[in-house]
Length: 384
Image 1 (cartoon, one colour):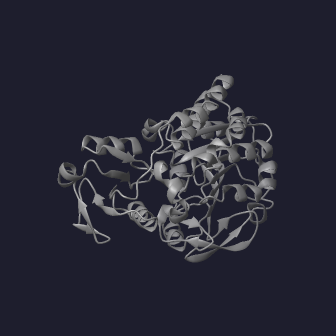
Image 2: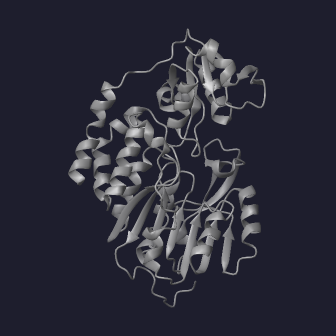
Image 3: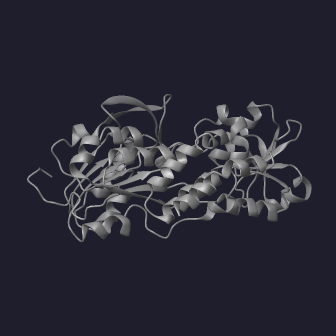
């Protein structure tokens, strides 16, 4: 079956070449569907490249203007402007892009541009946008992606990786509304190995404690180490876990390959990110330094695109304890193939899976599961 998936993967370049090229003429006024943060950023990027933005459209607008431009509902927009280019200005995990495109076309839009149709031309102005990239970023790595495909342990994972690549190239728009039925992080792939035994848990990117509290409902947590660098999120985290009956340590740190101070864009809740021009600064550290001499059974990493660095800083811990691993796979385009390949090099005797937990290929997760049933569950004399 791997040969079948690999063969399909290698057709992506031809399929993309056959796909009609979509460009927005600078002579045509552009409308934007969605007036949230991404829609407004898209407006500024279009204006910065010489395009005229005529206004915004929303299904249920709560204002008449945004950024000094008209904000219409579909009934107001459709009779007059349906022939104009319409850019989807919504880009998140909760609203499938294929559904948004269908809604726009049902309202009469004839020329719809999805985020990947415009990002290559606006990348400098839009900046980092999770997995969005110019098509060549994927097409130039087909052989490397094939190697990552071969690392995966079941057909569902291989299909998922292949579909994500096709989706991000604009070749499989309907994948936008796909998600696997399994729970994120805690599902049969991960929890069945513990067979009811207590879990020593590490959460990199603990946010407000929601993931830890979910685990407490599903398993016996012996001890938890929760890392969250965003000060507002950290305050919520401490408050939410205050009543926990399990030993838990909250640490106001990010995770990387060593100790340093980094720029950080905070104040966006789940959307915080590590950037050179961050609005604040955070301290990051390596798990090998903080948890030296400790034993862990489960490591979850959702660290705003620093997953590779966090893994580099946890190599000794992973080799010593052989924990279950759950890693976010959507913060950067290259995560899709580089993280599976990195784990394959780092984790001998593991099986690797990918599952899709929210829409638009957001919250795709790479799971690493030690093949030995005993994994790191032995209770030794190491301190918890």
